[in-house]
Image (cartoon, rainbow, N blue to C red; front, side, top):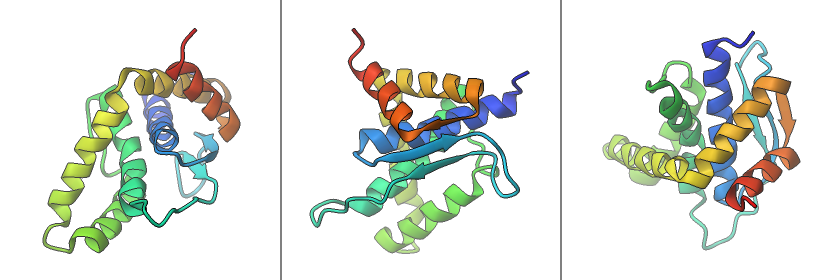
Length: 155
């Protein structure tokens, strides 16, 4: 039986995966099988950082993609349960914008992440990946990419 917490975790992890894929980051695995430290995890392959690429913004958007997708599904930004993501985002935001402007920068990045996950094809991919996670507990990065591509080009 699926609990609301399982569903929220599935959407959260699917949000990370879809934003990562939309921004060109390769996903290794997505899981909602809890361990001592986490309810779920989205693991990435080593990034290909290009000199012209804003990798800090990309990493922030990927991290916020989870909370944005979960909030769209549940109606609540569950910041407490996304503590690791928030810590990482805060650290990167301070690096990028400085301590005084980091909150405003984070808010702007959350709006961008919400816009990304709100695009029809991306939301369909999040729903599809979340469904698979609820059924199987974990999926490979290859499967996540397949569902993402399938939702971007539905035939």
